[in-house]
Structures are given as C-alpha cells and as structure tokens.
Image 1: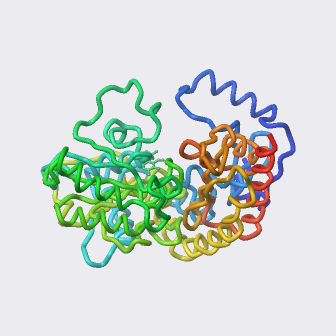
Image 2 (image 1 turned 90 degrees about the vertical axis):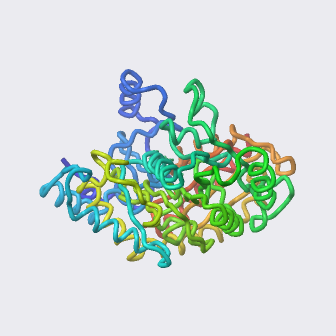
Length: 451
Ligand SMILES: Cc1ncc(COP(=O)(O)O)c(C=O)c1O
C-alpha cells in the first residue's frame, strides 16, 4: 500500500472531477447507512490520503488544506518525523494505563509543556484525549481547589460537547437542544466582539462594559465573587468566529480573578500550540492563567489533550481524577515530536506566513462588498461575511457559498460562528501556498458576490 508520504502529493491543489466524484459518492452513501446523523459535514470532501498541506480525495482530486482537521494537523499531514515516532513507539509499547503505572513519556512531555508556561510559577499537567476532556478536568480541578461551584463563561464560546463542557458552551442552541438540564451555577456574559461592539469600540478597546457587567451586575446581583470557582475564556474564540479578545480585556479578567481567588481558565484548545505565532494566544496579552487547556494542534492528529495548572492549584488528592488512555505512549511520542517541530521553526513560520496573509487580505472589506471583517493572529484567520457592510447583516448563506466555491476550486476551509470563515492551515505552509489560498478565496468571494 502506498502511503501519503511516499506518494509526495504536489504542493498545490488540482480538482479534476465533479465533486464529489464517483468513488466519493459511494463512500457518502455508505456513511449515510451506518454513521450518526449528528455529524456536521460542511461539504462533501471524502478524504483518502494526505501529506503536508495537501489532502487527496477518493477520486484523486487534491486540495490545499486550510482547515487542518479543525486546527489539529499543525505539522501538516503525516509529517515524516511524526510518522516515524508513532511507528517506533507502537513497536515498543502501545499502552500502559498512566493512571495505574509510570512511563517516562508522561513526565517528558509534561516538562516540555511546562517550559512554555510563565516562569513565575511551578506547573503540573494532566493528560486526556480530547478538548472536552481537558475542559471537564479543569472544571473539576477549579471546583476542587476553590471549594466553590459557580462558573462564568462567554456567549459564543465553544468548550466541547460532553455534559460539563456543554454547560459552558454557548455557541449554537442546536448543540444544547434536548439535552436537558446541564450543570447548575453557570452564567454566561458577552464576549468582546469588536466588529459588533455595541459601544463602537475598537479591536483594542472593546470589552470594558463586559468587565463592568461582571463586577457591577453579576457579582452584585447573581453570584458573590467568593462563590465563583472559575472564569473560563478562549483568548481567541474559535468556533465563535475567530474573534480575538483585546489584551486589556484578558488582563482585566486576570486582575478580577486574582482579586477574588477565582481560577482563570484559558481554553487554548483551538488557538494554542504556536498557531498564533506564540505558544499560547494568551502570551500576546502577557498574563498568567491558573489553568491552561490544550488539545487539537498538540500531537499532529493523535488524540492528546492536557490541562496545565499552577502546582498550588493542582492540589487534589490521589484518586480525585484519572483516565485509562490519557497520556498514551504512542500519542505522546507524536506530541513530543510535534512540540519540537513547532519550537524548531513552525511557530515562527506561523507568524511570518500569517503576517504575509494578513498583509494581502486586510483590505478585503474595501475590495469585496460581502466581507465585513478580517481578523485573527498568525495562522488563525477569520473572515466575516455580511449581506451589507453598513447594517452588518449576517449572511450565513453567502458564507456557505464562499466555503463551497473554495472547495470546488481546491481549497478546504471551514465555517465558524454564524457567518464567518476560518482558515487554519498547517503551520508548515509557505508563501506559494498562501498565495494560492488567497487567490482561490478571492475568486470564491467574487463568485458569491455575483450571486
Ligand atoms: C476552544 C475549544 N475548546 C474545546 C473544544 C472541544 O474539543 P474536542 O472536540 O476535542 O472535544 C474545542 C473544539 O473545537 C474548542 O475549539
């Protein structure tokens, strides 16, 4: 069998059949027979193999991947060093429950993660398998440590789909509908969304009113701050539309948390691991969280998640929390190489190519009637699509049309929020691939605009 790395797929996309092609159609029909209908497939890509930033479908069409498995494949698909590490470790030891026994991969990778954290504190790590597990663990740790139960999260946020994390998620009501009573004691407040700031503030200044709401209304009328276990926030909202929180806003949250002994939990599941040009999106604000959550881009597609907490916070006793698979040696072998590759150049590349892309697309709102906003950091690039720039009416149909047009031209992107597009390519992309993606997006937007 030929593997994707042996195939050496070309750097640029080529679509040569109608989409989906005949083999793709068969897989889609097969899938419909057996798979849960809850999965949201944005468009009919039927992936067969992948290498670098290119995905090949079942009919031999190739696509430039600006979705990266939802910001997961940070080192590109099947990076040879990641593949070799997985193969090596799979031949040595696939599993030994890290909750029962020791293996060196856990402290080795934990040490690497801790090296990214502020040096003012000591940090400890717990491994899981998915973003939602990291969120669940962090909720438990915050409650355990503070002996409080109230939680504050933000509208538009996405923290996962298991019942605890779903209680925090406030992205789309379909994600909560019919799932009954969720965790009690959760309050949501607005996220600083500069493009739609009701007070007309800028990307730097939006959100002061939310801080006031928290201190003057929530703390005085709903929950006394000494009842609040944690405030959980995405420094850049991912599913919500790639919306960065202003630095001052995150700094204000830290001030409030420090003042009241509330845990500041930063959900970096989508924004973290070098994607924004720094290890963590919160690094751009220079703050020190109590707990950081990571998953997605951490292990190039192998299921690894972690929460990293100040050692004074991770004070729970033996048996309080555990996992069968978390910290699996094969997954951590992939994570360890992924970390080295990100540190060894991919994080810098994310900043360089990200800046290049923003320099080419920041003027889209003046060139395209349906582009309302372009925003993000590094290779976390959001484009908001509107029907009318003046009224900012959200245009989900036009957004879907742009995503679909791009797909038919060989570019994979994803929708985000009600009417935004997210581009989150692997951190390995170069300028030629960036130019290709920009050209395809411009054609895709122009085509949607003509309709
Ligand atoms: C910020 C954030 N947190 C948590 C999650 C949940 O991660 P998972 O789907 O791995 O459970 C996601 C997934 O998109 C996310 O973007």
